[in-house]
Length: 390
Ligand code: 13P
Ligand code: SF4
Image (cartoon, rainbow, N blue to C red):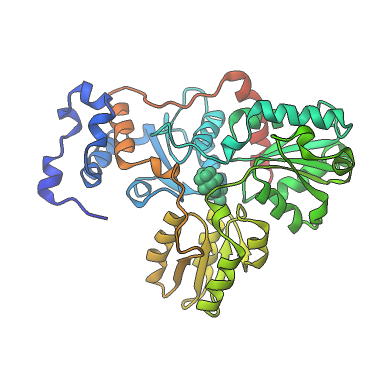
């Protein structure tokens, strides 16, 4: 990363020197080079003090994550968001994460997403009307009643607030990749242990990988396709299934293929292959271990010097770990050398962060993420259940 020279830092306008109209306008920031943002972000951050907290997901770029007060996986950030007393929660992550921060926020707290275009293609694959149609299909086929006696709906954190609320209202909960196995066990214990089925939204891979690790055979996990009549399944298939997986995926993690595992092992004998559970089942089966972003970091941290890792997750985290662990004699490479980038996480730039912070200093809240009250209530029920399940 280019570090600003002293003359450049001195030339960058101080917050008080920027006319209010300039502070408000994002366009004025987007034209400026990254390195000129450093001192301004630090200055605005210092002025806001304890009134603001910056949360950064591990996939954020270096120029942004280094300003995070807390970095972590979705679970850790959700916990941190719920714990903080800061008035402003600046979420350097994607839309569903900022929504969750707003849902868990205390009265008066404000969640801000520095760029509203930072969405998640997986979350967008399950729309609430489609999920409601799916539930009607399950009711019609006699698999569950409308309230969830029969099927427990679970949604991955990577979903809209409306989907989280849908699950909360029907006796289900939210999970992340770090507590998905515990959430599955919890779900099967609902209705006094009579709920023998789970509807898992929206990531079919995380659902399949989790179910399989808990001993559920692949043929008892069926895929519901929202674009097909009856989800593309027969009544018999619904009856035989233990897990009904939504047909969604992460376009970043789906790019890792089983042949990448074979070729990296052939090229680097002894290398450890570790992948995120959003990767395909075939990839996870071949890997030495799987886990959330936080767990992947932990696995490398705890390995002895000299260990090499091929990691199946987003490229910014992989590149950062490659740099940080090189000093400990550990080699980290991407499992797919064409590099898998989450383009929506990448939307959060230093310019967006600076713009959001400087506006807060001026008393302007920009890009607030505010979930509708009715949705918030049930989504909170589902998120509170998640925070209790580990
Ligand atoms: P983690 O919860 O493991 O950080 O994953 C979030 C995510 O979006 C992965 O694609
Ligand atoms: Fe969504 Fe995939 Fe990006 Fe994670 S990596 S935020 S699941 S698109």
